[in-house]
Length: 103
Image (cartoon, rainbow, N blue to C red; front, top):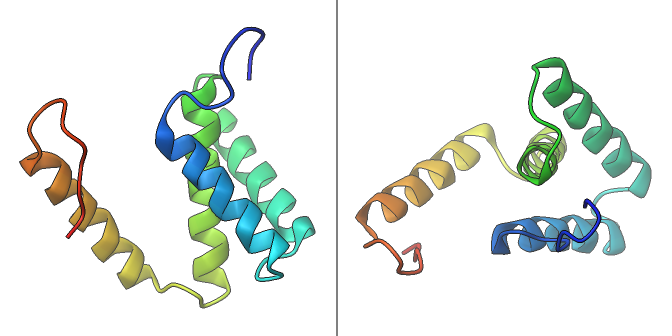
């Protein structure tokens, strides 16, 4: 978050952080493994030349969550792929300005 910028620019930013917080507080993911996974994703993003902004940061948050859950066997790569495409289909069929709803 930059000075004067709200902590979350999009609702999904807050939701991703809430999921990470819940996973750590419930003991599903250790705080150490969360910090390591997020740090690795931020470093990878920077190495690819991504901008240093909120969108890149929360993209790293999402990637870290996906990687941790997949590595721990809590979510399969196939499940992640299916969910991603379901969201894409829902987004594409949603009229502009309306909330996206996943069936």
